[in-house]
Figure 1 (cartoon, one colour):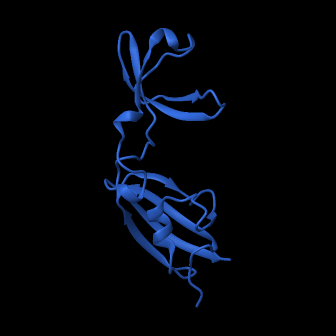
Figure 2 (cartoon, rainbow, N blue to C red):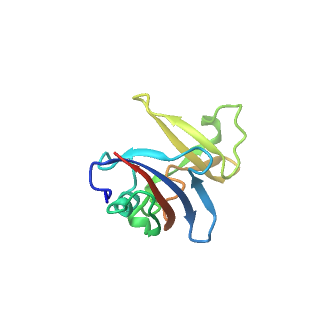
Figure 3 (cartoon, one colour):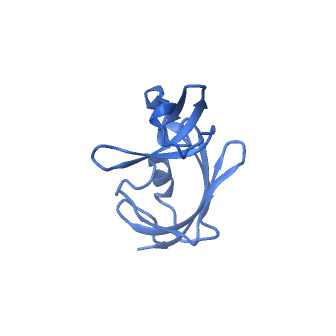
Length: 142
């Protein structure tokens, strides 16, 4: 029986959960994820969990934060003065913002604090600092 190995293109159904059981992502409604292992598009723990799985095999893996999105980095928090914000924005904690770099690249930010004269934005991945649980099912190899 064929098993998933490095550089295979596969299709996988998954449900991602936090350790408290909260589901943060699932392919259930949209169909399986098609991905090629080794391209760097998956977090390391997810990719490692797929290796040696067979078609229609199901398993649950726990990925420590170090193999997911890493620790929360304090250097990715930044204070922004209110006068630097567009007038149309009324910031609230948890609100998502997009910042554009000088080279035109966009970065997703989240408002972490709202103060009288400034806000603090967080550029960490929303799942940074979290251990993750994934229920996996390989539906196609190749």
